[in-house]
Amino acid sequence: IEEKNKRIEELQKLELSNADLHKSLTQLQNNFKELNIIYEKKKVIADFSEDEVKKYRCSVPELINIEKERVLGGKEGKPITIETPAIINIQELFDEWYEKGMDDKTFLFRNLSYLKDDHYHAKKVLTTWNVKIGSVLPNGRRTIEGRDLLAVDEGGPTQSFVAAFCDQLGDLVIRIPIRQDVRDGTGSRLALGEDCAGTRVATKYEEGIVIGKVGKTSKYSVRFESHNAHCLREDFTIKEVAISLFDCSESSGLVPQRDLLFKAIFDSKIRDFDSPMDYDQVKAKAKQYYRAVGRFFLHVIFDDQKLALSTKILPEFFMNVLLRGVLPESEDMYSMSDLMRDLHSIDGTFSVARQEHIKGEETRIKVDPDIPQPSSFADYGLDDEFLSKHKCEKMTQSTKITTENFRILVDLIALKTRDIAISSLREGITLGGVVRFKPMFLLVPSVVVSKLLFADPIYDVEKVISRLAIDETTYFYDFGDELVETQKLCFRETLPKALRILNTKDKEEFLVGFIFYVTGSAYLPNLDMNPDWKILIEFSPYLSNDDLLTAATCAKCLRLSAWAYDNNVEELSKRLETTVRVGKYAGYGMN
Image 1 (cartoon, rainbow, N blue to C red):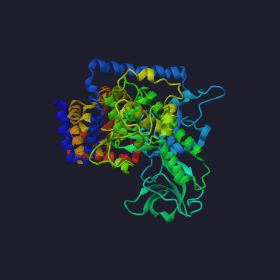
Image 2 (cartoon, rainbow, N blue to C red; image 1 turned 120 degrees about the horizontal axis):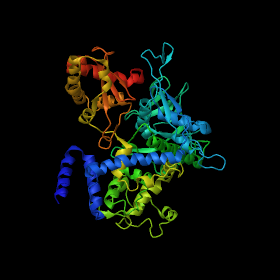
Image 3 (spheres, rainbow, N blue to C red; image 1 turned 90 degrees about the horizontal axis):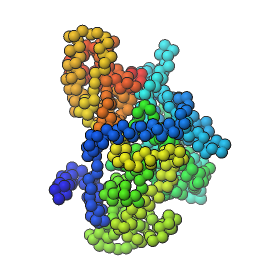
Image 4 (cartoon, one colour; image 1 turned 30 degrees about the vertical axis):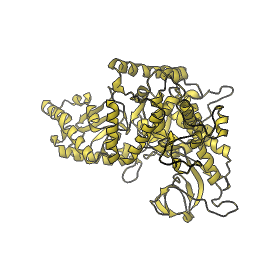
């Protein structure tokens, strides 16, 4: 009762500060009430004993290593070199690898079969990546004194590569070519809506990619090779229609698109515009991209460099399905409380009680808008044909949502309506069934799997400060007792003060930029499950108090002047702020 009253009080406060979030949480609370589901607090790491945490921390990585060895058969090939410009563009890399087909050396898109063995090349997906990220000097040069500025990969560049993948995955699209952008028979020009990002277009002089609409105007922002421009629709011709692979949710992260979206876009924007691809080919391309994403997930999870994906790219519901093999029907493993909460996180519009305005459309049955009515399967696009296809003999589109059929409903609206994405992601992340995640993770609580395998995109300055440690190499320089004491004071007081000041000044940008500059990734591993994770601080005699700070991302090491900026907080803050700001653009050219 006390917890219930506390939640009610928190909801009342939230209504004043964030109306949209209040509405969403109120809807979730109503869903619990309508189905008589008892609210159970979701487990967090703090709920486990220290011994349990230690057990999982030791056993899960060992299980992963054992499975990796089984798949590799004790033989790992030579590292695969991936070269990328200073500004990493995951979309361009995926498009390039897709076009290469059987020449794709990453094996993210390649068929893994050879002769009669369907999984002959499976182990090559796990081959170590040697990522080389280019740097560009202020004058635009990419070499200096004959030396290529590609960063040597001992961990840092790969971390940056994975971080870019996490950041850009929500914008990943497949592009479908069309030969004309005027509809056959009507002469009407193909319209671009809010979902136009990624569309390839051409003017009289050059091709470009649509970034999005320009505010509430009729113009579109287009990125060309040498510049960006705002163009009217009549200024360009559409060459390739973009279909987004993920829906971005602020609350839960990336949610794969439903099959219906691919069919709807094909019917409205591709079929009547002389495309060389039919709908089956569009689906096949989407499946290849989803499968490649799944293989990317697998590669990172199995990588020896302790890389981590952001929690935002795989919401807990899909993590349970794809990694733990826990489906909505699993009563023993998936509580109704967790299932309702996870469904709501990937579909915030879900409502057990239907109102007149559900889904923004009028229902055929006129009801009193003030009296909640039970939602039916049809309200979520589940018609009789779809239900029959998935062998739901006892269900019809008019079946009302109840406690008894809720698990079936979740399976249908969260998984079966996303078969293109889910089946392909599963094929990719398991290499077509070669990798067996379920025996590894089924009995490991979902929160533990999440915290061990995925990095946290949200952290605070105090967490970062708590993980600073002086690099022992600092003392190889024989600075002398007085200077060592100055350095220790800087480490203990001056540097933490500077970090707090800069974090207060610009909470959104500085801390993320600082972590990225030092580690190569904007994400931190969960610190409860990774107690040995540190940012090393080195005081270098090769840097003066006037120099910017440098970093070695592979070692997660930040180098400061040996003279510790005379322990002047203001001076250190200026140097640190400039370092992070310049490093954002100079990349590995500074490190």
